[in-house]
Each structure stands twice: as C-alpha cells, then as structure tokens.
Image (cartoon, rainbow, N blue to C red):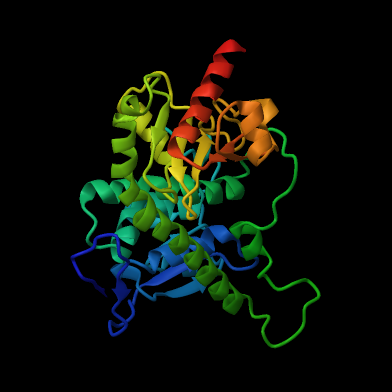
Length: 346
C-alpha cells in the first residue's frame, strides 16, 4: 500500500497511487453529515481493505444490509458483523478504562478497532511500543474531542466562551445551507469534501505526535532522571534547547518514575539563545500552574525585573506568571529557586 525508507520510522510514508481501489463498499447515513461519520469513512479508507472504497449514504436498511461495512447508522454495534452504530439505547462503549466519561461515536468505534492499522499505514516502520504510544496519544489529542462533541459530553461544567473553530464545527458548515442554491450543493459531494478535511486534520495531529512527540520522549525522560543534578529540590528540570514538546510527556514520566515532589519548572533556551523558565501546569488544566512565578515579577522587564527579583540578567516575566526569561542559565535557575522558595513561604 505504501513505500518508505526503513531508516527513519518517524517519517510519514507516501501511499502507492498505483494500487487499485477496494471493491468493498462503506455505508453511512444520508442527510445532514457530521464530523463523526466523515472522519470514520476517511479512517477506513486508509487501510488496504477499504482503500478508496465507494461510500453509499442512505437510511434504507435493505440497502445497508447488503454493504460490506456500515458506520453511524443501522442501530447495531457488532464488530464481527462490521456494523458500527452508537445511537442505540443500550450502547455504552468507551475507548478504555481510562476514558469512561466519553462514550464513543461511530468514528471512535472505527478508531478503537482500526486505529493502529490506520497509523501503521502512514508510519509502517514504527515498532510496537511506538505504535501503541501513537495510538493512545491520538485518542487523547484528537479522537476523544470528536467523540465528546458527537455524543454530547461537555468539555467543562461551565464554559466561558463558545469555540466554533474546531473540526466538528467546520465540517458542519460544509453542509448545504437551507437557502443555498447552485450546482455545487450535492450533499454527497460535500460529504467527500468534509471527509477529506477530517483526514487532513487527523494527519496533522498524527504527524506532530509521531514526528515530534515520540522522538522527544527520550530527552524528557533523561531530563527527569537528571533533575537532582539541576537542583537538590528535584522540582526543576533543564533541556538543552527549546521547542521540545515536553508537557504531556512530562506527566507520563512523573508517573513512570514515581516522581515526588512533582516538577514545578522547566528551563530551556529559545531560538535567540535566551534562557527561559516555564511553569508546569496542573495536569488536565491549561492555565493553572503548579507554582507560578512571583506576583511582583509579572509584567516587569529587564533591569526593573532584575532589581525586584534581586537576580542579574532578568529579561521578562509574563503577566500570568507562567513564563519568564534571563540572559544566562545561572540566572534562570536562580529565578526558579526563588519562585520555589516564595511558594514555600506562602
């Protein structure tokens, strides 16, 4: 199905365009489409058995019964029969025991059963451990949000604002409008556009996971294991350079190595060579830090910040206290130590 060089398992392969399409037919419902089944169809088309398969969109059960595989319609979830609907009252399937709050959508079911094959189709040289990491991270980073939106799971008890920029919303806007006229309003053609959009988004996240996050695991783990060499508190780690996608990996490494106390600050250089200190956020929270930089530093820069902090070479501290900078490693380390000391005093 694909061709690749075995030298780099983290490089996405190119599909072999000379292979003929599958003769098997995928079924899903007609009418207004959602991200759920559009993504599910795209996922199935990535594996050899359904490569470029024709899609039939209908709610006629007699037609659906004759199709090779059916998703998001039919009232049945039965893997052995290749039927993947989630609308039936008895449906209670989740991805695994760690994701019990979110029931699976149809695309979630497809991903649960075929996700590793989909990833392997694009990255055939990943070893089993790397494949499993990618499979789990893709659910956390991409698929669960699709499931939650389709099955009505709120992201938070109360949301401060509404996000209409996500994939599910963008797919929804591809449906022909109630008052739209023209030659390009065929819903089946629009469905194919939506499915392709879903695939591009999926691959964008998958590329980041496989080509950036997984290769970074080794470096984050080494930094965690060397934390006592940075500071005796064990709450500060250092990377040789910035850009490393360390956040989600750090939480995994803390659990793996039973880190206690948890790491509070990460030190690294930016592209210009300036040292930075970044607070580690509480796991599962986007904007709540385990320990923030001191309040009196926030929004202050350069000499004024150095004077307030009593540390030479300070360059800035963000208004929210999640990140700051210093001209030297020694300086940024002193900023981290001072922040930890202030936290212990409070």
